[in-house]
Image 1: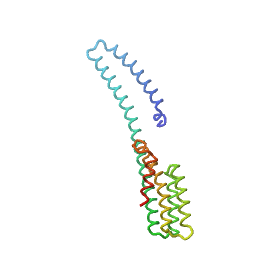
Image 2: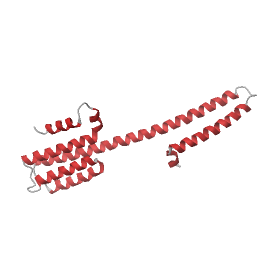
Image 3: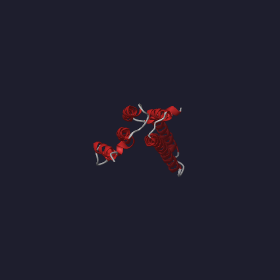
Length: 192
């Protein structure tokens, strides 16, 4: 029954049947009440009330569905933001500490799994590229030198561009700055 009620076509057809049936019933009652005072007015009030209740129920049903979709979307963006922030925080801690342990590599693998759940395909592809750069510079000695840190920062900046597009890309499209300008600014910011 719930599935039928979610289908707007079914709801519309059932509403039309009830409305038309109600109309004919009230029309019959309206003509039968010609002889009694105020009965026609009472029947018209009932008909108006029923129409108002029906319209209000349809509008509230649609509004509830829209609000649930909006809330779900907000929760998903919060989850994405938290996942991306945790990844960047973990990478920051590794680079600052300069020595990469097995635990760090295991944590990085778990971040990969978290990203697989929420990240866009573009972020996943760029993350793969980031991992290649990370392993290229760290696998040999498990140490992050200044040169390694620069290469990792460059790869992370490229990843950050994709993360930004995934989280707030719609706002960037409305901005006066192009995606290329924003990307250039992010890449310039890491060269301090």
